[in-house]
Length: 226
Image (tube, rainbow, N blue to C red):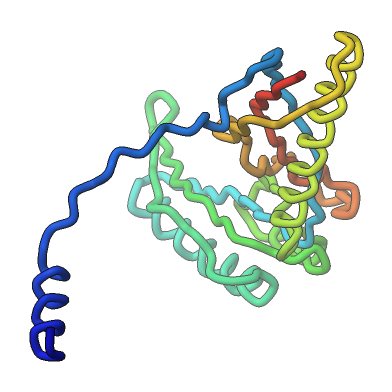
């Protein structure tokens, strides 16, 4: 066969569909010819923090709804002036709401809130400055994880959970007179996310004593013992 015929034969062969050949099924990773051990392990820990999410309540009262809202806007403007330089990033202010109360001559109360993020270094300054403003209440704060600490904590807890599962599996194998432990499956679908710890704010609060954010990792582990 000359070169041209050989090239044409290869071109036709490459265009033909290739039938799938039957492949013998291999034992999957979940197959165990020995004793199957299923464990649920959990590891918990706390993350370092360097910021707080703060929440400030703001109210104003007057003899009419319009006056209450106008006074609330004035107080909000003053609060923004003192809080914005100390906060990290933009402030969040929901639309105000108003209610009436009393019998006979009604009074009206307008309210909203101001929340944002402040560094640990500026926490005291922000709380003191905001607390001196009229109509402001300190509703609470939440410690936020430092940059990168959440990923480090996740890795640490995952390793601890895996090590704990391995210890339990080896102890069980030893009790049964078995020598080999093989990990078959890891199920991390139940792993918990970072849980910030909210606390009430106080003018005398020491930010270094705040409860840190916490995370838990839960793993379902299958081992084969033989």
